[in-house]
Image (tube, rainbow over all chains, first blue to last red; front, side, top):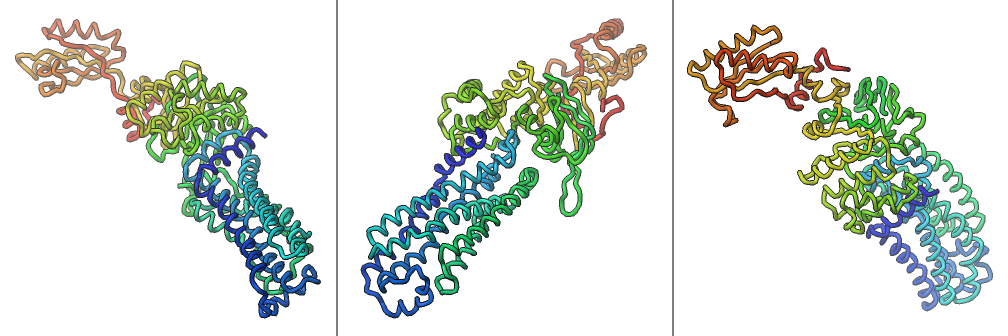
Length: 263
Length: 331
Protein backbone atom coordinates (compact mmCIF):
# COMPACT_ATOMS: atom_id res chain seq x y z
CA UNK A 1 0.00 0.00 0.00
CA UNK A 2 2.91 2.32 0.84
CA UNK A 3 4.42 1.67 -2.59
CA UNK A 4 1.14 2.38 -4.39
CA UNK A 5 0.72 5.57 -2.37
CA UNK A 6 4.28 6.64 -3.23
CA UNK A 7 3.75 6.14 -6.98
CA UNK A 8 0.34 7.87 -6.94
CA UNK A 9 1.76 10.82 -5.00
CA UNK A 10 4.66 11.09 -7.43
CA UNK A 11 2.36 10.88 -10.46
CA UNK A 12 0.08 13.61 -9.17
CA UNK A 13 2.91 15.92 -8.16
CA UNK A 14 4.57 15.41 -11.53
CA UNK A 15 1.23 15.93 -13.27
CA UNK A 16 0.64 19.24 -11.52
CA UNK A 17 4.06 20.41 -12.67
CA UNK A 18 3.61 19.28 -16.26
CA UNK A 19 1.73 22.22 -17.74
CA UNK A 20 0.49 20.32 -20.79
CA UNK A 21 -1.00 17.50 -18.75
CA UNK A 22 -2.36 19.90 -16.15
CA UNK A 23 -4.14 21.99 -18.79
CA UNK A 24 -5.65 18.87 -20.33
CA UNK A 25 -6.92 17.76 -16.93
CA UNK A 26 -8.41 21.08 -15.87
CA UNK A 27 -9.21 23.22 -18.87
CA UNK A 28 -10.42 20.69 -21.41
CA UNK A 29 -13.23 19.43 -19.13
CA UNK A 30 -14.18 23.02 -18.26
CA UNK A 31 -14.32 23.91 -21.96
CA UNK A 32 -16.44 20.86 -22.60
CA UNK A 33 -18.74 21.84 -19.74
CA UNK A 34 -19.27 25.24 -21.29
CA UNK A 35 -20.92 23.72 -24.37
CA UNK A 36 -24.04 22.21 -22.68
CA UNK A 37 -24.33 25.22 -20.38
CA UNK A 38 -24.34 27.59 -23.35
CA UNK A 39 -26.78 25.24 -25.05
CA UNK A 40 -29.18 25.51 -22.09
CA UNK A 41 -28.85 29.27 -22.13
CA UNK A 42 -29.47 29.58 -25.86
CA UNK A 43 -32.43 27.22 -25.73
CA UNK A 44 -33.93 29.25 -22.93
CA UNK A 45 -33.53 32.56 -24.73
CA UNK A 46 -34.14 31.66 -28.36
CA UNK A 47 -37.65 31.00 -29.70
CA UNK A 48 -38.43 27.40 -30.65
CA UNK A 49 -38.05 26.74 -34.32
CA UNK A 50 -40.77 24.30 -35.45
CA UNK A 51 -38.39 22.90 -38.05
CA UNK A 52 -35.98 21.86 -35.26
CA UNK A 53 -38.78 20.00 -33.53
CA UNK A 54 -39.67 18.23 -36.73
CA UNK A 55 -36.06 17.12 -37.26
CA UNK A 56 -35.97 15.73 -33.74
CA UNK A 57 -39.10 13.60 -34.00
CA UNK A 58 -37.10 10.38 -33.71
CA UNK A 59 -35.43 11.45 -30.49
CA UNK A 60 -38.61 12.88 -29.01
CA UNK A 61 -40.21 9.43 -29.13
CA UNK A 62 -38.09 8.69 -26.05
CA UNK A 63 -40.52 8.43 -23.06
CA UNK A 64 -38.16 10.65 -21.06
CA UNK A 65 -39.46 13.62 -23.06
CA UNK A 66 -43.13 12.64 -22.93
CA UNK A 67 -45.52 15.20 -21.57
CA UNK A 68 -43.09 18.05 -22.19
CA UNK A 69 -43.98 21.13 -24.15
CA UNK A 70 -41.91 21.98 -27.18
CA UNK A 71 -39.47 24.31 -25.37
CA UNK A 72 -38.91 21.82 -22.56
CA UNK A 73 -38.42 18.98 -25.01
CA UNK A 74 -36.00 20.95 -27.14
CA UNK A 75 -33.91 22.09 -24.17
CA UNK A 76 -33.88 18.60 -22.66
CA UNK A 77 -32.94 16.90 -25.92
CA UNK A 78 -30.22 19.33 -26.84
CA UNK A 79 -28.65 19.28 -23.37
CA UNK A 80 -29.00 15.49 -23.09
CA UNK A 81 -27.18 15.07 -26.35
CA UNK A 82 -24.31 16.80 -24.68
CA UNK A 83 -24.00 13.90 -22.25
CA UNK A 84 -21.44 12.52 -24.68
CA UNK A 85 -19.15 15.32 -23.59
CA UNK A 86 -19.38 14.24 -19.96
CA UNK A 87 -18.53 10.70 -20.98
CA UNK A 88 -15.61 11.92 -23.05
CA UNK A 89 -14.11 13.86 -20.14
CA UNK A 90 -13.01 10.86 -18.07
CA UNK A 91 -11.54 9.30 -21.20
CA UNK A 92 -9.46 12.17 -22.46
CA UNK A 93 -7.73 12.90 -19.18
CA UNK A 94 -6.60 9.35 -18.34
CA UNK A 95 -5.48 8.65 -21.90
CA UNK A 96 -3.22 11.70 -21.69
CA UNK A 97 -2.02 10.94 -18.19
CA UNK A 98 -1.49 7.22 -18.76
CA UNK A 99 0.35 7.93 -22.01
CA UNK A 100 2.72 10.36 -20.34
CA UNK A 101 2.96 8.24 -17.22
CA UNK A 102 4.62 5.30 -18.97
CA UNK A 103 5.96 6.60 -22.28
CA UNK A 104 7.06 9.79 -20.52
CA UNK A 105 9.08 7.71 -18.07
CA UNK A 106 10.56 5.77 -20.94
CA UNK A 107 11.66 8.98 -22.61
CA UNK A 108 13.21 10.44 -19.45
CA UNK A 109 14.78 7.04 -18.64
CA UNK A 110 13.29 7.10 -15.17
CA UNK A 111 11.41 3.85 -15.69
CA UNK A 112 14.47 1.62 -15.21
CA UNK A 113 15.27 2.80 -11.66
CA UNK A 114 11.57 2.52 -10.86
CA UNK A 115 11.37 -1.04 -12.20
CA UNK A 116 14.50 -1.89 -10.22
CA UNK A 117 12.65 -1.30 -6.95
CA UNK A 118 10.82 -4.19 -5.31
CA UNK A 119 7.42 -3.22 -6.68
CA UNK A 120 5.31 -5.81 -8.48
CA UNK A 121 3.97 -5.10 -11.96
CA UNK A 122 0.40 -5.32 -10.64
CA UNK A 123 1.06 -2.75 -7.92
CA UNK A 124 2.83 -0.47 -10.36
CA UNK A 125 -0.06 -0.66 -12.83
CA UNK A 126 -2.68 -0.20 -10.10
CA UNK A 127 -0.81 2.87 -8.86
CA UNK A 128 -0.30 4.36 -12.32
CA UNK A 129 -3.85 3.44 -13.33
CA UNK A 130 -5.40 4.98 -10.23
CA UNK A 131 -3.24 8.08 -10.58
CA UNK A 132 -4.40 8.46 -14.17
CA UNK A 133 -8.07 7.59 -13.61
CA UNK A 134 -8.90 9.45 -10.40
CA UNK A 135 -8.34 13.01 -11.70
CA UNK A 136 -10.44 12.25 -14.79
CA UNK A 137 -13.33 10.86 -12.80
CA UNK A 138 -13.09 13.64 -10.23
CA UNK A 139 -13.08 16.33 -12.94
CA UNK A 140 -16.06 14.67 -14.63
CA UNK A 141 -18.05 14.66 -11.42
CA UNK A 142 -17.05 18.24 -10.65
CA UNK A 143 -18.18 19.28 -14.14
CA UNK A 144 -21.43 17.33 -13.76
CA UNK A 145 -22.07 19.10 -10.44
CA UNK A 146 -21.39 22.46 -12.09
CA UNK A 147 -23.66 21.49 -14.97
CA UNK A 148 -26.44 20.63 -12.52
CA UNK A 149 -25.96 23.95 -10.78
CA UNK A 150 -26.21 25.74 -14.14
CA UNK A 151 -29.19 23.61 -15.16
CA UNK A 152 -30.95 24.53 -11.92
CA UNK A 153 -30.74 28.16 -13.00
CA UNK A 154 -31.19 27.79 -16.75
CA UNK A 155 -33.65 24.89 -17.17
CA UNK A 156 -37.02 26.17 -18.30
CA UNK A 157 -38.81 23.92 -15.81
CA UNK A 158 -38.30 21.38 -13.05
CA UNK A 159 -39.20 18.67 -15.55
CA UNK A 160 -36.21 19.63 -17.69
CA UNK A 161 -33.90 19.71 -14.68
CA UNK A 162 -35.31 16.33 -13.68
CA UNK A 163 -34.00 14.88 -16.96
CA UNK A 164 -30.42 15.63 -15.90
CA UNK A 165 -30.75 13.78 -12.61
CA UNK A 166 -32.82 10.89 -13.91
CA UNK A 167 -31.47 7.29 -13.62
CA UNK A 168 -30.06 7.45 -17.16
CA UNK A 169 -27.75 10.35 -16.32
CA UNK A 170 -26.89 8.92 -12.91
CA UNK A 171 -25.95 5.53 -14.40
CA UNK A 172 -23.95 7.30 -17.09
CA UNK A 173 -22.07 9.49 -14.63
CA UNK A 174 -21.54 7.11 -11.73
CA UNK A 175 -21.33 3.69 -13.38
CA UNK A 176 -20.45 4.01 -17.05
CA UNK A 177 -18.02 6.93 -16.74
CA UNK A 178 -15.74 5.23 -14.15
CA UNK A 179 -15.85 1.97 -16.09
CA UNK A 180 -14.92 3.77 -19.29
CA UNK A 181 -12.13 5.51 -17.43
CA UNK A 182 -10.66 2.15 -16.45
CA UNK A 183 -10.89 1.19 -20.11
CA UNK A 184 -9.13 4.39 -21.17
CA UNK A 185 -6.37 3.85 -18.62
CA UNK A 186 -5.76 0.29 -19.72
CA UNK A 187 -5.75 1.33 -23.38
CA UNK A 188 -3.26 4.05 -22.39
CA UNK A 189 -1.09 1.49 -20.61
CA UNK A 190 -1.23 -0.97 -23.51
CA UNK A 191 -0.47 1.68 -26.12
CA UNK A 192 2.25 3.18 -23.90
CA UNK A 193 4.09 -0.06 -23.50
CA UNK A 194 4.20 -0.45 -27.28
CA UNK A 195 5.22 2.99 -28.52
CA UNK A 196 8.07 5.31 -27.63
CA UNK A 197 6.54 8.75 -28.11
CA UNK A 198 3.99 10.18 -25.63
CA UNK A 199 2.12 12.03 -28.40
CA UNK A 200 1.75 8.86 -30.45
CA UNK A 201 0.49 7.06 -27.35
CA UNK A 202 -1.99 9.83 -26.68
CA UNK A 203 -3.27 9.88 -30.25
CA UNK A 204 -3.65 6.11 -30.43
CA UNK A 205 -5.32 6.07 -27.01
CA UNK A 206 -7.82 8.67 -28.18
CA UNK A 207 -9.28 6.03 -30.53
CA UNK A 208 -11.21 4.85 -27.50
CA UNK A 209 -13.56 7.78 -28.09
CA UNK A 210 -14.85 6.21 -31.30
CA UNK A 211 -17.40 3.75 -29.80
CA UNK A 212 -18.77 6.59 -27.71
CA UNK A 213 -19.19 8.75 -30.76
CA UNK A 214 -21.03 5.91 -32.53
CA UNK A 215 -23.40 5.57 -29.55
CA UNK A 216 -24.24 9.24 -29.50
CA UNK A 217 -24.50 9.77 -33.24
CA UNK A 218 -26.89 6.81 -33.21
CA UNK A 219 -28.86 8.46 -30.44
CA UNK A 220 -28.97 11.87 -32.11
CA UNK A 221 -30.16 10.36 -35.35
CA UNK A 222 -32.83 8.37 -33.53
CA UNK A 223 -31.35 4.93 -34.31
CA UNK A 224 -30.52 4.24 -30.67
CA UNK A 225 -32.84 5.05 -27.81
CA UNK A 226 -30.88 6.41 -24.87
CA UNK A 227 -32.32 5.41 -21.49
CA UNK A 228 -31.06 3.90 -18.27
CA UNK A 229 -31.33 0.38 -19.75
CA UNK A 230 -29.06 1.39 -22.63
CA UNK A 231 -26.53 2.68 -20.15
CA UNK A 232 -26.73 -0.38 -17.90
CA UNK A 233 -26.15 -2.60 -20.95
CA UNK A 234 -23.28 -0.37 -22.11
CA UNK A 235 -21.82 -0.48 -18.60
CA UNK A 236 -21.96 -4.27 -18.56
CA UNK A 237 -20.19 -4.45 -21.93
CA UNK A 238 -17.55 -1.96 -20.82
CA UNK A 239 -17.07 -3.85 -17.52
CA UNK A 240 -16.37 -7.07 -19.45
CA UNK A 241 -14.01 -5.18 -21.75
CA UNK A 242 -12.29 -3.72 -18.68
CA UNK A 243 -11.60 -7.14 -17.21
CA UNK A 244 -10.16 -8.30 -20.54
CA UNK A 245 -8.08 -5.14 -20.90
CA UNK A 246 -6.71 -5.36 -17.36
CA UNK A 247 -5.50 -8.90 -18.09
CA UNK A 248 -4.16 -7.86 -21.47
CA UNK A 249 -2.51 -4.72 -20.10
CA UNK A 250 -0.80 -6.63 -17.28
CA UNK A 251 0.34 -9.31 -19.71
CA UNK A 252 1.64 -6.78 -22.22
CA UNK A 253 3.46 -4.72 -19.61
CA UNK A 254 6.64 -6.76 -19.98
CA UNK A 255 9.41 -5.03 -18.08
CA UNK A 256 12.02 -6.60 -20.27
CA UNK A 257 10.39 -5.51 -23.53
CA UNK A 258 9.93 -2.00 -22.22
CA UNK A 259 13.53 -1.74 -21.07
CA UNK A 260 15.15 -3.26 -24.11
CA UNK A 261 12.97 -1.63 -26.78
CA UNK A 262 13.25 1.95 -25.67
CA UNK A 263 16.13 2.78 -27.93
CA UNK B 1 27.87 -12.34 -2.81
CA UNK B 2 27.26 -12.49 -6.55
CA UNK B 3 27.58 -15.77 -8.37
CA UNK B 4 26.68 -16.76 -11.89
CA UNK B 5 26.77 -20.13 -13.60
CA UNK B 6 26.70 -20.23 -17.39
CA UNK B 7 24.52 -17.12 -17.44
CA UNK B 8 23.22 -16.29 -20.92
CA UNK B 9 21.04 -13.66 -22.46
CA UNK B 10 19.80 -13.79 -26.02
CA UNK B 11 17.78 -11.11 -27.78
CA UNK B 12 15.75 -11.36 -30.96
CA UNK B 13 16.91 -8.82 -33.52
CA UNK B 14 15.70 -8.75 -37.11
CA UNK B 15 14.60 -12.37 -37.05
CA UNK B 16 17.91 -13.65 -35.72
CA UNK B 17 19.20 -14.21 -32.27
CA UNK B 18 21.89 -12.02 -30.77
CA UNK B 19 23.80 -13.36 -27.79
CA UNK B 20 24.43 -10.44 -25.46
CA UNK B 21 25.85 -12.58 -22.66
CA UNK B 22 27.22 -16.03 -23.38
CA UNK B 23 27.90 -18.39 -20.50
CA UNK B 24 29.09 -16.01 -17.81
CA UNK B 25 30.67 -17.73 -14.81
CA UNK B 26 31.57 -15.29 -12.08
CA UNK B 27 32.08 -15.06 -8.34
CA UNK B 28 32.18 -11.70 -6.63
CA UNK B 29 33.19 -11.80 -2.97
CA UNK B 30 31.48 -9.93 -0.14
CA UNK B 31 32.90 -6.45 0.40
CA UNK B 32 34.75 -6.51 -2.91
CA UNK B 33 34.81 -3.76 -5.50
CA UNK B 34 34.59 -5.71 -8.72
CA UNK B 35 35.27 -3.91 -12.00
CA UNK B 36 33.42 -5.19 -15.03
CA UNK B 37 35.29 -3.91 -18.09
CA UNK B 38 34.39 -4.26 -21.70
CA UNK B 39 33.76 -2.26 -24.87
CA UNK B 40 30.41 -0.74 -25.83
CA UNK B 41 27.90 -3.45 -26.63
CA UNK B 42 29.87 -6.08 -24.71
CA UNK B 43 26.83 -6.99 -22.61
CA UNK B 44 27.80 -5.25 -19.36
CA UNK B 45 24.50 -3.44 -18.92
CA UNK B 46 22.58 -6.58 -19.86
CA UNK B 47 24.49 -8.47 -17.17
CA UNK B 48 23.71 -5.82 -14.57
CA UNK B 49 20.06 -5.83 -15.59
CA UNK B 50 19.92 -9.60 -15.16
CA UNK B 51 21.61 -9.43 -11.77
CA UNK B 52 19.24 -6.65 -10.67
CA UNK B 53 16.28 -8.75 -11.83
CA UNK B 54 15.22 -6.23 -14.46
CA UNK B 55 15.41 -8.77 -17.24
CA UNK B 56 15.38 -12.55 -17.11
CA UNK B 57 18.32 -14.70 -18.17
CA UNK B 58 17.78 -16.88 -21.25
CA UNK B 59 19.80 -19.67 -19.63
CA UNK B 60 22.05 -20.31 -16.67
CA UNK B 61 21.64 -19.39 -13.03
CA UNK B 62 22.69 -16.54 -10.80
CA UNK B 63 22.61 -15.68 -7.11
CA UNK B 64 22.81 -12.27 -5.52
CA UNK B 65 23.14 -12.02 -1.76
CA UNK B 66 22.43 -15.74 -1.54
CA UNK B 67 19.10 -15.39 -3.36
CA UNK B 68 18.54 -17.00 -6.72
CA UNK B 69 17.47 -14.87 -9.66
CA UNK B 70 14.09 -15.87 -10.99
CA UNK B 71 13.03 -17.30 -7.64
CA UNK B 72 13.40 -14.39 -5.22
CA UNK B 73 13.38 -11.36 -7.49
CA UNK B 74 11.61 -8.95 -5.16
CA UNK B 75 13.89 -9.92 -2.26
CA UNK B 76 16.94 -9.40 -4.50
CA UNK B 77 15.65 -6.03 -5.66
CA UNK B 78 15.15 -5.01 -2.04
CA UNK B 79 18.75 -5.91 -1.24
CA UNK B 80 20.55 -4.29 -4.17
CA UNK B 81 21.04 -0.71 -5.22
CA UNK B 82 21.46 0.17 -8.86
CA UNK B 83 22.84 3.21 -10.60
CA UNK B 84 21.63 2.95 -14.17
CA UNK B 85 23.51 4.25 -17.21
CA UNK B 86 21.47 7.44 -17.18
CA UNK B 87 20.39 9.01 -13.85
CA UNK B 88 16.68 8.82 -14.83
CA UNK B 89 15.49 11.36 -12.28
CA UNK B 90 12.08 12.98 -12.07
CA UNK B 91 13.29 16.31 -13.35
CA UNK B 92 10.26 18.36 -12.33
CA UNK B 93 10.47 17.13 -8.74
CA UNK B 94 12.85 18.33 -6.06
CA UNK B 95 15.96 16.38 -5.10
CA UNK B 96 14.43 15.57 -1.74
CA UNK B 97 11.17 14.39 -3.25
CA UNK B 98 13.01 12.23 -5.79
CA UNK B 99 14.65 10.40 -2.91
CA UNK B 100 11.55 10.22 -0.72
CA UNK B 101 9.61 8.39 -3.42
CA UNK B 102 12.31 5.74 -3.76
CA UNK B 103 12.77 5.44 0.01
CA UNK B 104 9.07 4.59 0.22
CA UNK B 105 9.29 2.17 -2.69
CA UNK B 106 12.19 0.38 -0.99
CA UNK B 107 10.27 0.28 2.31
CA UNK B 108 12.77 2.44 4.21
CA UNK B 109 11.52 3.00 7.78
CA UNK B 110 12.98 6.42 8.49
CA UNK B 111 12.34 8.02 5.12
CA UNK B 112 13.12 11.60 6.10
CA UNK B 113 16.22 10.61 8.08
CA UNK B 114 17.71 8.50 5.30
CA UNK B 115 16.98 11.11 2.66
CA UNK B 116 18.66 13.80 4.74
CA UNK B 117 21.64 11.52 5.46
CA UNK B 118 22.39 10.90 1.80
CA UNK B 119 21.67 14.43 0.63
CA UNK B 120 24.17 15.66 3.21
CA UNK B 121 26.72 12.92 2.43
CA UNK B 122 26.69 13.81 -1.25
CA UNK B 123 26.71 17.54 -0.66
CA UNK B 124 23.22 18.15 -2.04
CA UNK B 125 21.47 19.22 1.15
CA UNK B 126 21.59 22.92 0.31
CA UNK B 127 19.87 22.22 -3.01
CA UNK B 128 17.35 19.76 -1.57
CA UNK B 129 14.30 21.72 -2.66
CA UNK B 130 15.55 22.59 -6.13
CA UNK B 131 14.09 20.70 -9.09
CA UNK B 132 16.37 17.88 -10.18
CA UNK B 133 16.13 19.19 -13.76
CA UNK B 134 18.08 22.28 -12.75
CA UNK B 135 21.06 20.22 -11.53
CA UNK B 136 24.38 19.82 -13.33
CA UNK B 137 25.30 16.37 -14.67
CA UNK B 138 27.51 15.73 -11.67
CA UNK B 139 24.79 16.67 -9.21
CA UNK B 140 22.27 14.49 -11.04
CA UNK B 141 24.67 11.58 -10.87
CA UNK B 142 25.21 12.13 -7.16
CA UNK B 143 21.45 12.24 -6.61
CA UNK B 144 21.07 9.00 -8.55
CA UNK B 145 23.79 7.40 -6.40
CA UNK B 146 21.98 8.57 -3.26
CA UNK B 147 18.80 7.01 -4.62
CA UNK B 148 20.60 3.68 -5.08
CA UNK B 149 21.80 3.66 -1.48
CA UNK B 150 18.78 4.87 0.49
CA UNK B 151 17.82 1.39 1.61
CA UNK B 152 21.41 0.56 2.61
CA UNK B 153 21.82 -2.32 0.17
CA UNK B 154 24.73 -4.71 0.76
CA UNK B 155 25.22 -5.04 -3.02
CA UNK B 156 25.47 -2.01 -5.30
CA UNK B 157 25.57 -2.07 -9.10
CA UNK B 158 27.12 1.03 -10.63
CA UNK B 159 26.84 1.29 -14.40
CA UNK B 160 29.33 3.86 -15.73
CA UNK B 161 29.10 6.09 -12.65
CA UNK B 162 31.53 8.73 -13.90
CA UNK B 163 30.70 8.71 -17.60
CA UNK B 164 30.29 12.23 -18.98
CA UNK B 165 31.25 13.87 -15.70
CA UNK B 166 33.84 16.61 -15.43
CA UNK B 167 37.04 15.65 -13.57
CA UNK B 168 35.95 17.27 -10.31
CA UNK B 169 32.52 15.62 -10.28
CA UNK B 170 34.11 12.30 -11.30
CA UNK B 171 36.52 12.57 -8.38
CA UNK B 172 33.67 13.22 -5.94
CA UNK B 173 31.87 10.13 -7.22
CA UNK B 174 35.05 8.04 -7.03
CA UNK B 175 35.73 9.21 -3.49
CA UNK B 176 32.22 8.24 -2.58
CA UNK B 177 32.72 4.77 -4.04
CA UNK B 178 35.82 4.48 -1.83
CA UNK B 179 33.61 5.37 1.14
CA UNK B 180 31.20 2.62 0.16
CA UNK B 181 34.05 0.13 0.02
CA UNK B 182 34.97 1.19 3.55
CA UNK B 183 31.44 0.29 4.64
CA UNK B 184 31.93 -3.29 3.46
CA UNK B 185 29.44 -3.18 0.61
CA UNK B 186 29.95 -5.31 -2.46
CA UNK B 187 30.25 -3.06 -5.47
CA UNK B 188 29.85 -4.24 -9.04
CA UNK B 189 31.29 -1.45 -11.16
CA UNK B 190 30.79 -1.35 -14.93
CA UNK B 191 33.18 1.11 -16.45
CA UNK B 192 35.15 2.10 -19.51
CA UNK B 193 37.44 4.18 -17.41
CA UNK B 194 40.50 1.99 -16.88
CA UNK B 195 42.18 4.47 -14.58
CA UNK B 196 39.08 4.42 -12.41
CA UNK B 197 39.03 0.62 -12.41
CA UNK B 198 42.71 0.54 -11.47
CA UNK B 199 42.15 2.89 -8.55
CA UNK B 200 38.94 1.45 -7.20
CA UNK B 201 38.70 -2.23 -8.00
CA UNK B 202 40.00 -5.14 -6.00
CA UNK B 203 39.50 -7.39 -9.01
CA UNK B 204 38.46 -6.82 -12.57
CA UNK B 205 36.69 -8.96 -15.11
CA UNK B 206 37.32 -8.23 -18.79
CA UNK B 207 34.21 -9.09 -20.69
CA UNK B 208 32.94 -9.19 -24.24
CA UNK B 209 29.87 -11.41 -24.40
CA UNK B 210 32.05 -13.90 -22.50
CA UNK B 211 34.36 -13.36 -19.57
CA UNK B 212 37.84 -13.14 -21.08
CA UNK B 213 39.82 -12.90 -17.85
CA UNK B 214 39.26 -12.14 -14.20
CA UNK B 215 41.76 -11.33 -11.47
CA UNK B 216 43.40 -8.42 -9.68
CA UNK B 217 44.93 -5.84 -12.04
CA UNK B 218 48.44 -6.77 -10.85
CA UNK B 219 47.88 -10.48 -11.34
CA UNK B 220 46.61 -9.86 -14.86
CA UNK B 221 49.68 -7.78 -15.61
CA UNK B 222 51.92 -10.56 -14.38
CA UNK B 223 49.99 -13.16 -16.35
CA UNK B 224 50.19 -11.17 -19.55
CA UNK B 225 53.55 -9.45 -19.37
CA UNK B 226 55.49 -11.19 -16.61
CA UNK B 227 57.62 -9.01 -14.29
CA UNK B 228 60.19 -6.62 -15.65
CA UNK B 229 62.90 -4.45 -14.17
CA UNK B 230 64.15 -1.37 -16.00
CA UNK B 231 67.72 -0.31 -15.36
CA UNK B 232 68.59 3.20 -16.62
CA UNK B 233 72.27 3.64 -17.39
CA UNK B 234 74.26 6.85 -17.74
CA UNK B 235 75.57 7.66 -21.25
CA UNK B 236 78.54 5.43 -22.05
CA UNK B 237 81.57 6.23 -24.24
CA UNK B 238 81.04 3.20 -26.48
CA UNK B 239 77.31 3.74 -26.66
CA UNK B 240 75.12 0.95 -28.00
CA UNK B 241 77.91 -1.61 -28.19
CA UNK B 242 78.65 -1.25 -24.52
CA UNK B 243 74.93 -1.44 -23.64
CA UNK B 244 74.60 -4.63 -25.69
CA UNK B 245 77.64 -6.08 -23.94
CA UNK B 246 76.10 -5.40 -20.52
CA UNK B 247 72.80 -6.91 -21.70
CA UNK B 248 74.64 -10.06 -22.75
CA UNK B 249 76.19 -10.39 -19.29
CA UNK B 250 72.81 -9.96 -17.61
CA UNK B 251 71.23 -12.50 -19.97
CA UNK B 252 73.62 -15.13 -18.66
CA UNK B 253 72.24 -14.80 -15.13
CA UNK B 254 70.18 -17.95 -14.48
CA UNK B 255 67.00 -16.20 -13.30
CA UNK B 256 66.81 -13.75 -16.20
CA UNK B 257 64.30 -14.65 -18.89
CA UNK B 258 64.82 -11.87 -21.40
CA UNK B 259 66.71 -8.59 -21.81
CA UNK B 260 65.98 -5.76 -24.24
CA UNK B 261 68.20 -2.72 -24.80
CA UNK B 262 66.43 0.61 -25.33
CA UNK B 263 68.16 3.70 -26.63
CA UNK B 264 66.85 6.50 -24.45
CA UNK B 265 68.62 9.30 -26.27
CA UNK B 266 65.28 10.76 -27.38
CA UNK B 267 63.34 9.72 -24.27
CA UNK B 268 60.69 11.95 -22.77
CA UNK B 269 62.13 11.72 -19.28
CA UNK B 270 64.83 14.37 -18.92
CA UNK B 271 66.35 12.49 -15.97
CA UNK B 272 67.21 9.43 -18.06
CA UNK B 273 67.54 10.97 -21.53
CA UNK B 274 70.83 10.36 -23.25
CA UNK B 275 71.53 6.95 -21.80
CA UNK B 276 70.39 3.39 -22.39
CA UNK B 277 67.83 1.25 -20.63
CA UNK B 278 67.92 -2.47 -20.05
CA UNK B 279 64.46 -3.99 -19.77
CA UNK B 280 64.95 -7.27 -17.92
CA UNK B 281 62.23 -9.93 -17.60
CA UNK B 282 62.66 -12.00 -14.49
CA UNK B 283 60.72 -14.01 -11.97
CA UNK B 284 61.09 -12.01 -8.74
CA UNK B 285 62.43 -8.43 -9.01
CA UNK B 286 62.51 -7.85 -5.25
CA UNK B 287 64.82 -10.84 -4.78
CA UNK B 288 66.90 -10.55 -7.98
CA UNK B 289 67.39 -6.81 -8.50
CA UNK B 290 70.39 -6.54 -6.06
CA UNK B 291 72.22 -9.26 -7.98
CA UNK B 292 71.56 -7.50 -11.28
CA UNK B 293 72.80 -4.20 -9.90
CA UNK B 294 75.94 -5.82 -8.47
CA UNK B 295 76.66 -7.54 -11.77
CA UNK B 296 76.28 -4.35 -13.80
CA UNK B 297 78.32 -2.22 -11.40
CA UNK B 298 81.06 -4.86 -11.44
CA UNK B 299 81.16 -4.41 -15.24
CA UNK B 300 81.68 -0.67 -14.84
CA UNK B 301 78.14 0.43 -15.58
CA UNK B 302 76.84 3.56 -13.92
CA UNK B 303 73.23 3.16 -12.88
CA UNK B 304 70.86 6.09 -12.65
CA UNK B 305 67.59 4.34 -11.72
CA UNK B 306 66.20 0.88 -11.15
CA UNK B 307 62.40 0.58 -11.50
CA UNK B 308 59.83 -2.08 -11.99
CA UNK B 309 58.16 -1.76 -15.40
CA UNK B 310 54.48 -1.49 -14.63
CA UNK B 311 52.19 -1.94 -17.61
CA UNK B 312 49.07 0.16 -17.50
CA UNK B 313 45.68 -1.44 -17.15
CA UNK B 314 45.05 -0.11 -20.64
CA UNK B 315 47.87 -2.39 -21.90
CA UNK B 316 46.27 -5.30 -20.06
CA UNK B 317 42.81 -4.49 -21.38
CA UNK B 318 43.91 -3.99 -24.97
CA UNK B 319 46.03 -7.11 -24.90
CA UNK B 320 43.09 -9.14 -23.63
CA UNK B 321 40.71 -7.60 -26.14
CA UNK B 322 43.00 -8.26 -29.09
CA UNK B 323 44.68 -11.49 -28.08
CA UNK B 324 42.20 -13.04 -25.66
CA UNK B 325 43.13 -14.56 -22.34
CA UNK B 326 46.65 -15.78 -21.80
CA UNK B 327 47.11 -19.35 -20.65
CA UNK B 328 47.53 -18.27 -17.06
CA UNK B 329 44.36 -16.17 -16.85
CA UNK B 330 41.80 -17.44 -14.42
CA UNK B 331 38.58 -18.06 -16.25
